Length: 271
Image: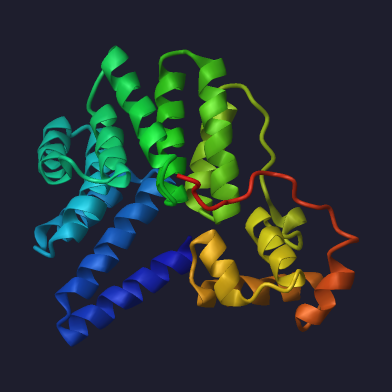
């Protein structure tokens, strides 16, 4: 997380030096995402508010405002959340499943009772028809958090397990840790990666390594997992270090002797 914060700060500094407002907005948006994942909602709100001040069209409505709504609700500022939701709703009428799913997820956060649950269900259904796995995972996480606060622990665990598994595959560590904490609060035991497991492959690294071993190129792997080829390359470098090899040629021998990841994989949407 410290590495991500440093990268965001560097990007913001560079954007200011270049006079690039859009670059600064991206940095503030990234801050909001990271801090929401960590559960640092005051910091997330500060980043989202700064990003929302800039008038760069669809990015504000589709990307920044959902972060603002979540952070405002969790920071105890309901009116600010409602204002953000109004702006978001006005821009998503008749939109795609992704847009309406994000709006439903945000609306659930400011709602109560059966209506809140219907919004969470709609968010999961709509986002489940898209390829944006991280937003679907966040819908499961928020729904699970809400269910736990309704003392519906069994139902909460189902949503939180799904979120936890999705974040593990995607590599969204901050949101994954948030899901893990919520699962622990329901009474479920969840393994945490620590110093003793630092040389093990993460679920995402295991998945990428298997695809690379099977002959997939970095662009092909990136297309399947919805990440860039450069991100695939970065993960593979970490895999090589952990496995004690120097290239893809070593994957055939290194992987079979290791525990195989059997959790859910990210697949292309069929709908």
